[in-house]
Length: 442
Image (cartoon, rainbow, N blue to C red):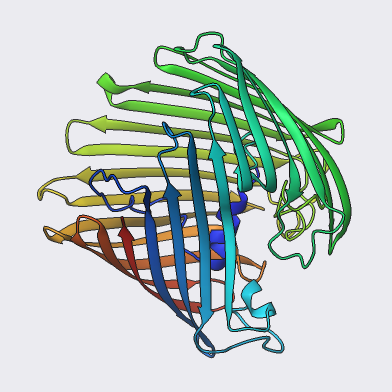
């Protein structure tokens, strides 16, 4: 239900960084250098029939030491951005408004993580201090503070943390505080069973008011043979918030995978402390709903595969549809052809059926990827969405069709140059987006 904070920031300030089809970081050989990481530079130009905007981004990720073995290690992740055309605080509607435009300078920065790890006893203690993303919670809560994790026994681990919640758009953290912890039990350290209890208290005084939220989560996951089961129940302010259940099966010999997930939101979710849910204050209230999703994939030999999905969301408790709360049903079938008749060629076609508010219709999309050279790949594709939310303005767009064309050139083992051109048509306008980037791993 809740997207992570990093995903939100990437979509708002560095679109494309979190896409499902994003290629993996460039490969590099093992190095004895204690500092390793990646640097990415990207230029983006966007235009409509009447407006345009251009920006430059730099994303830096650094790691000092080897977190798996060294007593002391560190990590840093930050983003720099420059508005190269100077369009700031435009009066009236402007399709390319972003949070960066609210600052006085033409250049802005975002510090995502900057922490130091200390492991006095290998595999038993972990102490982390600095700006970090708490992986104790699926919500990926950002914090400036300290966290300690201790393995009481081979099957039991406990953790505790305290600090200041991170709100990158708040002028001062005065009055903010957070803390909590978790207990995790793994009955068999070599098995696939895990049980967790986690608690978070947050006091966040922001533009939307004072929020004091208590989040309690109970979760378990177990696996046996090809099957895995996961469930998580959460309470917010000591009332039921949501419950998620997921079953996964993978049978490699049959080239078959299937996953089913059900989500139930008990009550209307209003504005929350920013680190728990960055969307709640932006997208207004979230009405209670039940969401069912089924995903399946089946391979046929070495070249053919078929993916299928079904999603149904229904509002409950007499909730009324609004801008960001919809009933809808979606079916998708997507056959694909890989490495035939050319090695490296992939062709995928996707057929969707949408049903929402009495409106039924089919859509067709797909993508193609082909190697033009040993180190150069070309891809093109088209997709459709009934509803999307513009991450820059917070506005909803309906009936969005995307056409994307991209080139990827591996200049050497550690560097990649990428270019992408996207045409987006929606109920407001037609958008053209050109992105050119360079990424280097060291």
